[in-house]
Amino acid sequence: MRPRIGLTGGIGSGKSTVAQGFAQQGCYVIDADRIARTLTLPGGAAIAPIAARMGAHFIGADGALDRARMRDAAFRDPGYKAQLEGILHPLIRQQIDQQYQHACDTNAPLVIFDIPLLAESGQWSPRLDQVIVVDCLERTQIARVQQRNQLPQAAIEAIMAQQATRLQRLRKADWVLWNETLSLQALGEAVFDLYNELIAHYRLLQPD
Image 1 (tube, rainbow, N blue to C red):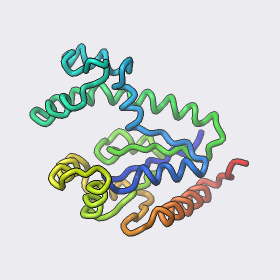
Image 2: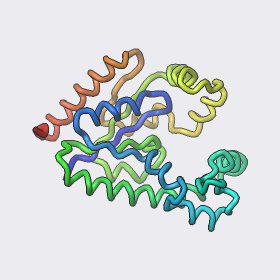
Image 3: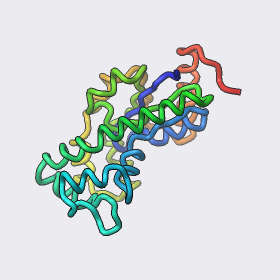
Image 4: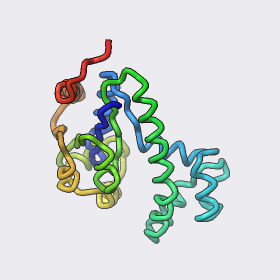
């Protein structure tokens, strides 16, 4: 068995860059968002249940989830979001469990569970050994997302309002990576330092 390290952070925090940094150190990274996207692509395991329970009109002509239509429906009625999560979350957990079992058969020293909504769900804490939170100020999150996606501030704030607050995330943290003013190089160095701390904490040797 390999240590199960949760990784989370709000939009624009730099969490994805941190996940890439851990992968570069040889860690096995399980990306919950990527799993969710795969499940809703043409032929994905969630497509048939979504069509059956929520309506075929939520499936686009290409056979994938019509994300724009689902997003609009969920905005008008939160019940749609709950229904979608009821379909996706068990499938995501199943895929994550399968990937973790595979990771345990590799030489990866740590398994990183990249879960954006870790703090929003009570299911993950019992399934993880420790949690890393990538943190920064909210105004920095907004500025980064504006630069990256050219979204208006109001749209970013609406996304953030649906996520856990900084305080809620920090309450879940065993380790905090403060990514407020770090350059990409400095962030990479911080990930390397944290990786070594985790290795020491679990008394593991790096793979040859």
